[in-house]
Amino acid sequence: MSLLERIRSSSDLKAVPADQLEAVATELREFLVETVSATGGHLAPSLGVVELTIALHRVFDTPRDRVIWDVGHQAYGHKILTGRRERFGTLRQLGGISGFPRRDESEYDPFGTAHGSTSISAALGMAAARDLVGDDYKVIAVIGDGALTGGLAYEGLNNAGDLKKNLLVILNDNDFSISPNVGGISKYLTRITSGPLYRQAEKEIWQLLGKVPAVGKKARGAAGKVKESLKNLVVPNLFFEELGFKYFGPFDGHDLPGLIKLLEDLKQIPGPVFLHLRTVKGKGYAPAEQDACKFHGLGRFDKMTGAAEKSTKATYTHVFAQSVIDEAEANPHVVAITAAMPDNTGLNAFQARFPERFFDVGMAEQHAVCFAAGMATAGAVPVAAIYSTFLQRAYDQIVHDVMLQKLHVVLAVDRAGLVGEDGASHHGVFDIAYLRSLPDLVLMAPRDENELRSMMKTAIAYGKGPVAVRYPRAPVEGVAPEPARVLELGKGQLLRDGADVAIVALGTMVLPAVAAAERLEREGVRAAVFDARFVQPLDAEAIAALATKCGRVVTIEEAVLAGGFGSAVLEALAARGVAVPALRLGVPDVLVPHGTRAQLLDRLGLTPEGLSSRIGAWLAKNAPVLP
Image (cartoon, rainbow, N blue to C red; front, side, top):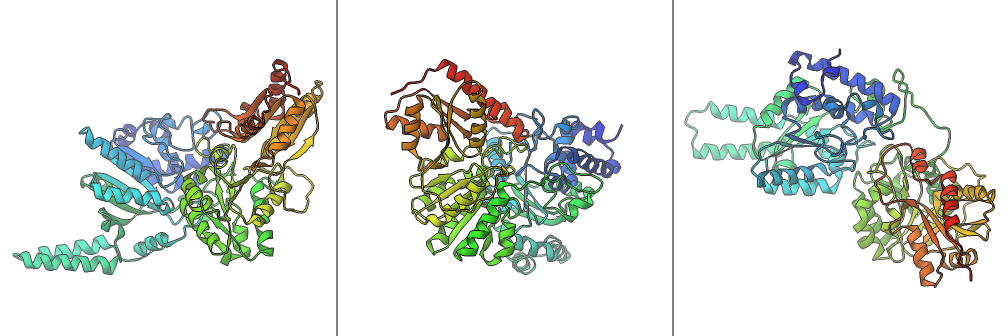
């Protein structure tokens, strides 16, 4: 039996002889590569914290002591060491374990994480609640330098320095979030790590003073001034200490014996402590070390060569990126903005073509949207590409900074709908509900790649206020290419006529609706299919006329039903006095788990087969109401 097979808890890890811990690290890396090569997942982040993971569970009394992994995609080793090794082969698969920490999965996961920059605030909240009840467990937040660019991290740091709670914040500094880090914080951390060790220099000053006999008040005062000068000289603007933390580092995050000794010492220090570790993303697996961006998160790959399985199909993300480039060629005012995801949003191609018009603001979605608003006031046409689930974080900026001022900001809402293996925290199913209530915000969704190109052209040409275009994480439909054109605002398109039921679909559900209508026709049901195109402004008159003609209406969307597209259709019908039986199909009032997108669509009945079956059964029970 291997060492790793014997470890099912932190107690088991503590029983491993110290001279065998390096072997545990080696086995853990091998197991990670072996398993993730078969399942896909976030490999490089977890490889980079193997030593830290072992040291934390070796030193601290987990799960009583609480470790919070910011974002959480680096917690695979943590899962393996805490009783989930045997199930790790089900990682991110339907019915399997999550790719992120989850409170309902293990007592070792005290806080669910999947979006960045949350760990410090959550850890501080735990520490404050702990002190209220007189408990004494330790609380540790592990945050990456990418997540440290998010504003929430600084709100937590600021409050922690003021409250003076016993709290350990560990910075995993590897120069990456998903892509290489950008911005002032990254440069500041580089200055720290490239300079002399402040703590070592400070120690030497105090050792020198200790050799001076009868050091008096005046000498101690002078020593304090020397120390302040030392801080400013060796590490300019010791930001974390000024916030109230005791700062230690930078230290080698792969020195396992040194880490264990260091954590043993630091857990004895009261108050907020900040430990700065330098690590290598993808450590121990050459392909991941050489291409940390690719191995941040990927599908299945060959563990021997690192070659990943590749799809030959273009995606909606690719089409979006080329569309923005095409529009920027014709309009010099078009700029592109990403929040730490130039590769995953496709905007790395825009960056290569227009480097001076491309802006990566770091993992800071709120800033990205407010930054775009500022650009819009000065004549730019900003296109901010942000995942639907991450755009939630910038809702106040959309409302206060963009919508209220009627600024022409284009929100490219990537990964709208079900995203698959990342699960509930990443499904982009809420954007319709949280955007359609905003007055004068135009919201569109394409049924295919031609429509996406036209919607991007329409959004950039609009000029009267905010526009959002939502599109999925999926391959394109493969339709014959057509030139992009400016669409008539708020006008949908009747794709198939019929008299028995009006199917009103949006975006990714339009073509499945057409296929479902064809299946229904074989059963004698004549279904009309209307591509709404716009959620706002909605083509209400056309939809009302079609619903009146057919006497029954079905709405379909790849988003939550509560407050979503179907709700908008029913509100429009009610406002026009159209009272017909209605069925809304979409994502019900549940948190959808992880699995492939195809599996999840099938489970929710949003495939052509599922739609035709559900609509057919409903039609059999609901007679039409005709004028």
